[in-house]
Amino acid sequence: MEEETARHKQELRELIWRRLTEAGVARFPGAWGRIPNFAGAEEASARALALPEVQRARVVFVNPDSPQYPLRAGLLAAGKRILMATPRLSGEKPFLLLDPERIKVHPLRAATLKGAFRYGQRVGPEEAPPVEVFVTGCVAVSPRGERLGKGGGFSDREYALLQEAGRLLPETPVITTVHELQILPEIPQEPHDLRVEIIVTPERVLRVSRETAPFP
Image 1 (tube, rainbow, N blue to C red):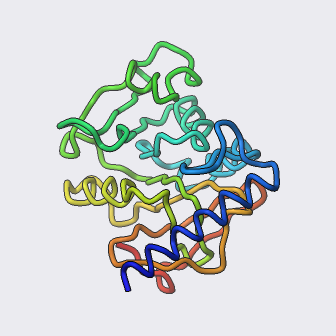
Image 2: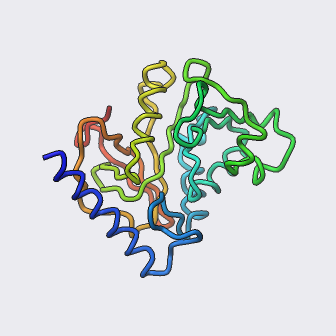
């Protein structure tokens, strides 16, 4: 059953990567094998920044992938502190904390992965401040909040590390920004899979009920 689920998930990833590529909305360096950057990422990020949950938040966890770059820059420009995971959660302190009050360069520079390493502070889960919004990248997502990553399981681990350290509040929403073509009717899930509560595209905001889609 697990092998069948894994095979089905990979087929769905390839479906999305092909769909974005053929539609001409996948941005450099291409969709295949990654959390795909997409045309309209800036508009989706602007919608995410306008969410009341994001407006209220002081600390936001954001994945380091390209489609969420404009969101990271916008959060820093708005004075929010950002927590990012290092690639593959490397090192004893696998997170990077960016504090706009301490960063003296433009948010567009600090929001890149290279900029985060240069201007951010490496912290362990226990050293991280409480996270009020958790942003994750997706290859695909369903209206029920079912999420499909690129297959490494890192978002699940990032969430679990912060949850175990008591750095996620009970009301912390899980948000993603995606292209409309990344939304599928349903995605097979396993018990450890992270689910999404708010889906933001360039065109709309889709909210998922916690009652119909249980969360970790």
